[in-house]
Length: 566
Length: 42
Image 1 (spheres, rainbow over the protein chains, first blue to last red):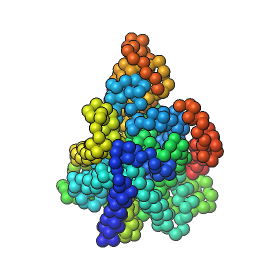
Image 2: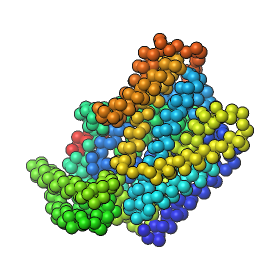
Image 3: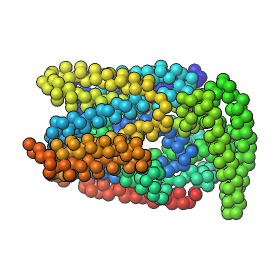
Image 4: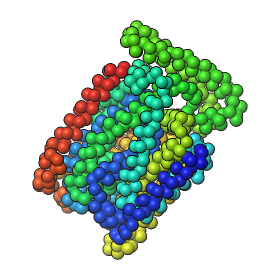
């Protein structure tokens, strides 16, 4: 990086930390620390919800996914708007009416303490582990790209955000997220503009779309039904709906965001606006990836976008093999450039037979290039068996670092930090609030002073921050990290959602039945995942349905002594 | 819960049901647009 890049990086990160500390001064009790005194306007809550969901990997991995697999990943978000409506109708009014700090408080009111504790525990378990991965994922990319030590990068990534999250609580998280998202959107817009601008002068935006489409990258809708296929319209709408319902309705990292809103109306507005903007936003991010694909048809692409791994191979006995492979790969460049030019000419002339010929030729070259990329991965694996050869997360980053002007590279690195911080800060805040409200205050010290609770809340934020960094230090060999986080979530979200669905919709079910039903369902979900019968998105549906079924079956045999109502 | 829900006035449209229909209708329109987009460029 140049001095200009370092300056941009340092100024941006410092400004965010100072802004977070300044906006959140004057914390006095749990209400101000975890709910911001319920005074945050809906548009800040909206940005906070979006900033919590979108991690650095979202902005890096999504364009890379469009490059390799096309835009069908967008379908993953189709269930989200429907979930926003259901949460606005069912979940939010109850949370506001009961004036809860965490979603799990409601479960004691509706069932009993053990069901509340089980659900809080499941949340803490999956959120703590996935937060560790959320720190590790951008750190490994930065360390590979910039040659930084991975351990120090993890500590730097996690350590800085602990400062303002611990000091300022939820208000610091919300206000920094809104600023972070503003910077991120500006950076992504700039990157998108630059992709089109850097294409050859005779290639316009429309030509680029046609080329990308002809190469199968604009496959936004896939209608074929296959339970093992991760991204099609059916898994997106149904599985995505259950995942979003559980994530936004019962995961404290999100519930804690919209509970900070001034009232029920503002909570609902933030969620419904999220339902309106999320899908188009994801579409535009992935469109950048589909255009980057066209860019690399015209300009030389590396055999692996994780060039740190290639450099490593060149220091081993496998260097000659890799060099030969790279030469073969480079020789394809000239061929592809001629073929893409022929395709554009045919498209402009609307000459259908010529379009089909050029498209077929380009696809043959592409599959030859893909084969060489696979061979390169094999060599990397031989040279370094511990290496993660999946380079999807590096594609967009490679484009930016090698093609954007000085200063913008520093901005992009800052964006990686900011996007990571947004989601991790909300996660730490939710881990601390759940620990404080559902365990510390409920079971350990129910009658302590405001000062004591505030001090303990800050301490627990620090503890969870250190724990997450520790998880990040040990995380490796997890394959695609965005998928690892999603799979981890899907293992628990279905069960947690099932408990809430029973609470809201099955009035005759009591605490004992739902508690044991949830435990059985969790065991079944883990068994199904290990058996690899269905794609992970369906685990959310299965977990939820199983809790409902088991609870209904067990209820006649496990009557509760006390009956509580919502 | 339902009483709170019904008495609370929604911004702009006055009724929350209109907001819910807008979100669902917007999703349906996006899916149709994406379908046509996929067909047009494939």
